[in-house]
Image (cartoon, rainbow, N blue to C red; front, side):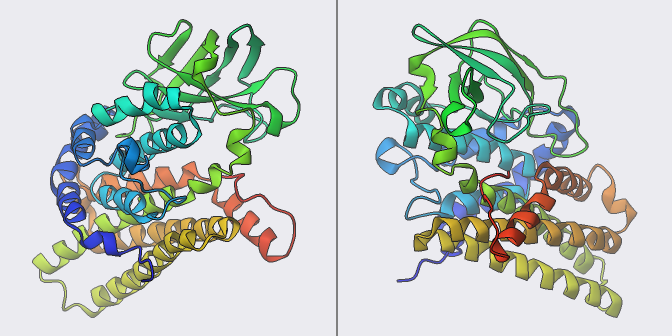
Length: 388
C-alpha cells in the first residue's frame, strides 16, 4: 500500500489534537503572546499525547515518527495541526522533538538513558542551538570548544535558543579550537541546568510575532563539558545532513498557521452573511487555490522521504517550505482585507496568527532557499543542508 501523508489526520489522535489546537490552545494564546511566556499548559497537553517525543523510536518510548523512519508524517502533521491554534506552541514542540531525535539516534546507550528516557517519563523542554550573532558559516561557529582532560571548555554566546535549557537541556553547537575544516571541527555539546558558567537572558526575546515560543540568549563562560555530554563525533551533524531533515518542520508551521487563519475568517464570513458577495467569493476562491497548492506540495514532500533519495527529499522539502511561506504571506493579506479591521482586535486570533507568520517566515532565509534550488536545477554545486 502506498504511503499517504494525510492518512494520520483521520486518526483519533489527530482529531483530538485538532480540537485542542482550535479551542484550548487558541484561547490560551492571547496570554502567552502578551507575556512572551512559554505555553506550558499546551505543552503538557502535547506531552500527555506523546507528541513531545514523537521523533523517538517506539522501542525507546516515543512514537517513532521522523523523516528517516517509516512514518515521516505523524510528527510533521502534528506541528501543522498545533500551528492552527498556536504557531509558537508548534515551534516549541518542533525544537523539543529535534533534540530528542538527535539524542536518540546519535547518542550512546548511556546518553539515551541519561537524556532521552527522562523525556518519556515527564515533560522536558529542550533547545537545539546553532544560532549566534555574526557567524561566518552555518557550521563554523564563534563559540569555541577547547579540548582538555575529560572533555572540553566551551565559551560563546548563542541566540534564538527556543525553550531554553532550564526545563530540560540544550544541544549547543561549537567549533573545536585548532581545527579549520568544519567536518572535523563542528561539535555538539549538551548543557544542563546547574552547570557552572551557563546563564540565559530571557529579556532579549521580544519580537512582534511568535512570542509564545520564548527563545533566550545563552551565554557560556568557561563551561566544562565532560565527554558524557558530547553528542556524536566531531562533524556528526553536517555529515549526517541533519539540517536537511528539518526543512519540513518550518513548512508545517507556515501551513498550519494559515489554515487556522483561513478557517477562522471563512467561519466569520458565513456567520455575517457575506458569502453571496461575488467579490468575497473571488478572494476566497483565490485563497483556497493557494492553500490547496500548499497542502498538496507539503504532503508530497513528506511522502518523498519514504522513497529513499535523501537529496531529492531535501530539495522537495525546501520547495514545499518556500511554497507554503509564499502562499501564507499572500493569503494573510487577502484574509485581513476580507475580515476587516475589527477582526484584528486582540480578542480575536487573526492578528496574532498573521504576526506569527510574518515573524516566523523571516526566521528562514527564503532567498537562500531559492538560490539553492536554482543551483540544483542548473546543475551547479549546492548544499541543501546549508539553510534553516
